[in-house]
Image 1 (spheres, rainbow, N blue to C red):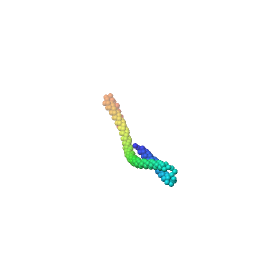
Image 2: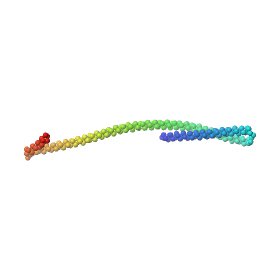
Image 3: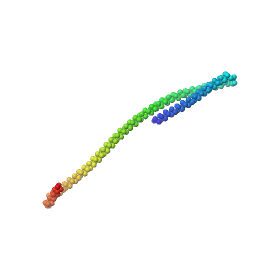
Length: 203
C-alpha cells in the first residue's frame, strides 16, 4: 500500500469520526432539551393539578402522566443509547487515531528508507559515471596509440620495400657489369665503362 492510499484512509476516518461526533452532539443536545421540556411540562401539570380544581377526571390526568412518564423514559433510554454509542465511537476514534499514528510512522520510515536508497543509488550512479569516463578516456588513448603504431608500421614497411628494391637494382647492375667484363667479345673500352660509371656515381 502506497503513501497516497494511507493518507486517504486516514483522512476518510478523520472525516467520518468528525461527522459522527457532530451529529451526536446535535442529537444529544436535542434529547437533553426535550427531556428538560418534558420535566418542565410535568412540573407545570403537577402545579396546575394542585392549584386548580380538577377539570379533567383523575383517570385522564393519571393517563396523561403515564404517557408523559413513558415518553420521558423512552427519551432517557434513547439518550443512554446515544451516550453508549458515543463512548464506542470515542473508543473507535482512539483506535483509528492509533492506526493513523502507526501509518504515519510507517510512512515516515518508508520515506526515510526511500531517501536512503535514492542517495545510495545516486552515489552509485556517480561512481559508475566516473568509472565510465575513465574507461572512455583510456579507450581513446589506446585507440590513438594503436593508430600511431599502425601509421609507423605502415611507413616502416614502405621504407623496407624501397630498400629491398634498391638492393635488387644494385645487385642486377653488378651482375651485368661482371658478365660484360668477363665476356671475350667485350672490348677493353666497353668493359671499363661500367667501372667508370660507378666511379662517377660515387664522385
